[in-house]
Image (cartoon, rainbow, N blue to C red; front, side, top):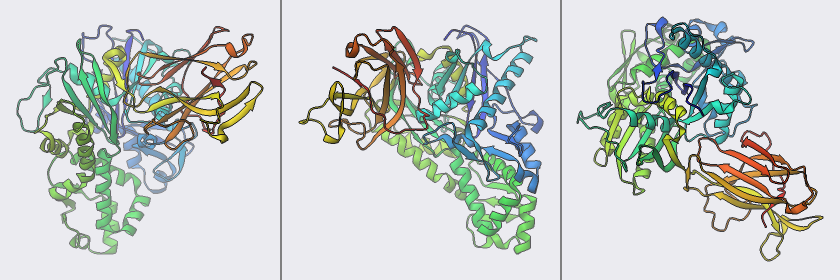
Length: 582
């Protein structure tokens, strides 16, 4: 990847934005941002991850504009439109393919790939327009830039591939120029940015004046507190300033949206299931506006006063006096047109999320590292309740810091990462990865049901051949090389099927055993068959980058196929392997 201009898109669950750099010298200037929300009298570094389509699935608007347009629509008009918010979480914890659908606010579904593609297309076009307007009239096109798209580190590889596919369809990069798009892991990007900040560029909850020292050997945890996921990485600073991952990416789906859901559940408890269901159905735009207000108010550790939306109030009055709804519910009161929720009740909405973060951090701190700092980044890290909780829980073990602008850390760090991927020198493999192969059948070693015969003899099918082990350190640019040969002399195509597992591999022999999951496959043409089964097929794999890439080389024909593993194959059925190792 050359040192061209960089645009990094931070595609968040709740908010999205971009940062960019038009300098070719890394240290010269800080990445620049667009600030959003001018029409709504706001100035924020990101815009809500909301997208609106018409009834024919045609893109209408994104961000604050989509939110505002949807809020203004009433009844049937709103229900006919496809409005998606926080839709990034539809990729969490799922095995994806291009046909996966996601549900809009109106209960109807669209293909997820189209929703993500149009969102990325909007951000791409907005970035090019904004940069051109602020570059003295110079016009830019997508191919002038190296692009970076951020994803959670704990995402499945199929979700990372899905984002790359959406970016390709959005015209961010074109076929043959795939290397001009980098996938950055969100907590890593934040870590890279935090490392670059001045020592006093952080806030602490107890105003202790702590600075972030970055001497070689310093170990720290980055907690990316997003709207959807809590994404945790552990880094050590190396001589020269690069970072080394110490612990495989961990986390959960208990981000800031968990708190918003608790607010909504509480409102349902106040107004009753039947009334709330009717309100959700009849006035989705008004509800969306109220939930946005709640998401802003929840950042402070105080009582929350929510102005009761007009239609909710009118529907409630039809049932009974509005004050009556509040009489039997603790922690809330009716206050002249406002719903007042006590500070203690608000804190209770955080309990599940905070317990999840605390548990994940305790597990890491038990591992024997010498962690000096916990850095809190991401939009959810703006919450005073979250920061105070983490400080109270862990300040006796390490220093808890938050950059002054936690929502900007990921996209600014992603610009630096796009310019220099070697900033993260090595990573820890989250799984044991292997490839399926055949061995000569041995009745004393192999299961009878794995036996098959071809014209070259008897074979054992589906042997798990380890390529890299779980928790193994892998260099970001290191290539792992393995040699194989065909199982038939006139074979002209080689299939490699790849698997992964988190189980202890001692005693693991076959790819169909418990805890082993197929993740993808590639096919290599091998047209020159003159040397029969003595042909050498080389498999070169990069495990240490943010995406796994495979180069398969048919030595005799000289053909080389470089590909990314297909993690999105619709069919994950078992394929008989047709390679072996002598």
